[in-house]
Image (cartoon, rainbow, N blue to C red; front, side, top):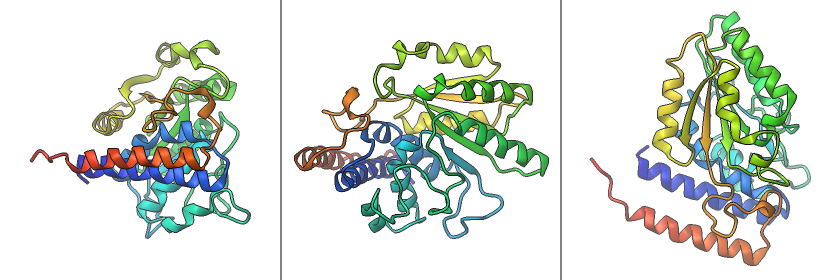
Length: 283
């Protein structure tokens, strides 16, 4: 896909997120909107090796969403990639829906794991990466975490494990949007020292703009060239990205828009889509 097409897709995913959450009446808009470019880059930017027609293809790359409360963004990307009908997005958090408020692999087998409790994702991903090494497989593992869950003890244990066993077939990505459920992460547990912390634990650190598709794709490619050392990408993002009245606002962590707010958000996103349409591709 061209950069213009990827940007248009990001806009469509953001519209999906707002529509889904407004329909459900519950969920997490802020952290869903902040990871859109990361997910689009992974699934549509040539990073992940995957095939929706062969969901259990043995050689597929593995992706784990550790910040599972942001699953509306992943559901939208999976639907637009062909893993489920786009119309099914309307069933988010509905009784009997496959699209639960946190990831449920039993209901949606295209997921690599169920998730919900923050801090587990890196451990799960490292287990998958180690399995690939034991089985002499070439597929890669990606784990997307929140900056808030870097406070979890299990995350730091996994950081040590990755260095000890030189796990170099996994790329960790941290959505550094700066906000968690009740405060700025900089005010909690040294959230401003993520780069120094990972480097102290022996990781190779790549620091990027998490809304820049080119930087995300390039960082993922660079990570594959690092050997005998785990790599983490610190993706600097804006919580609530794309909806001006949600951006960097603490209350939109787990608050859903009412009908009027949803209409205003969708209007803003549609105006942005018109601007994207006018962009001329550079050949």
